[in-house]
Amino acid sequence: MTRRLKYYLKTLYHYEYGMFDKTSESFATVGSEISSSEWINELMLGMRLSGLSYRHVQVAPPFGIRFDTDASCAQFHFIARGAVILRLGGEEQILETGDAILLPRGGEHCLLSSPEVMSRDIEQIDSLPVCDNFSCVNECPDTADGAPSVRLFSGFMQFDLGGMQPLVSMMPDVMHVGTLLSRYPEVLPMLEAMAREASLKRAGSAGILSRLADVVAASIVRGWVESGCGDIGGWVEALRDPRLGKVIAAVHREPGRDWTVATMAAEAGSSRSVFAERFRSSLGISPLGYVTQLRMRLATRWIAERQLSIDQIAWRLGYGSQAAFSRAFKRSTGQTPGRLKHGQAPGSSVARLGQ
Image: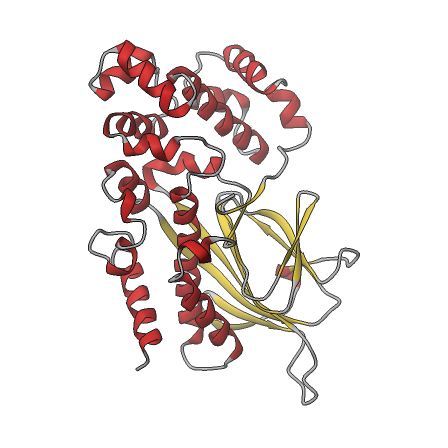
């Protein structure tokens, strides 16, 4: 058994039996700088990615594949061979061999061979079931003359952060493996193994590909958290502060609670003045400003998903009436909840890790 394969199997074992546990050798050594924060550990230990369905796709240009993933689930794509254009919300970016992306809130998006190609719904393309949740799409069988084709692997996943689920609404629409490889080289063998498994018709490849996809997707999320959570400011830095971390965790668990500076300071075990000054210096925003910001981000996402009424959103976020919520929403976003609901969903935010 090669050294790389041994590492590989160990990685899969740790994912199955406690991926982010402190005893997990393959992950604890990387990112050990934040292992002292129990609140970050709580965030990461609560993360679960459960694969609902996976597809191994082989197609030849011209092609266009449309995915319409439920907003409550995540979509993962790995490009094993070739190049595709990802189109999401009017924005496009090129994905090349070895690229992996995670769309934490799913949504409608397309993988195209070129911008002008019309897309087809992935659900309408014939596929061959391999096992319960794994199927193959092959519209370009390998030929003797070695005709070029694109090979990709896609996974539809249930994405659960447990008590920290509100953090999902703060993630960019697309999370790219990008610079993750330079910071976390242990991800590279997993991507290489996925490419090998996708190119070979071997026994058990469906299960191995599925599990590797789960690990890589989770690693993308962890890299985003450890790099500072994109544009969320000092969120992770504040989590490293035991007192601030305790408060932030509580606010994310219960965004609709009647938070005041006094209740937040009590949660931190500090005086109001000391807590407020410490909070602002760490995150660049007041405690109540942070609560409002979180609520408005959640509200914007929930309105765009069109699954809750404005009354239900107001109640979940702790507002006594729809009118009070609407006023707070307009002050924060510049438009009313009703206008957003009947207009356009929020623009997408495509980001790469480490940027």
